[in-house]
Length: 78
Image (tube, rainbow, N blue to C red; front, side, top):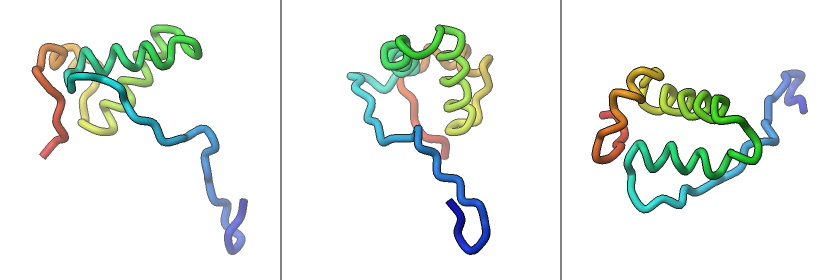
């Protein structure tokens, strides 16, 4: 699709989702990723997707996800 001669990127694969988890812990969120995406991706790919999301939202790399796994809850960075 173009707008005034510019290519406009409109991803068709994004859709609104809501997480169905009882707690806001990192382990619960990662487990929900596994449940929701297991039919589409391998465990390694799901982990990579989760790492990309946590890096985007919190600035955490893969090692920080491992370190923060024991946190009681996840909150947005200040």
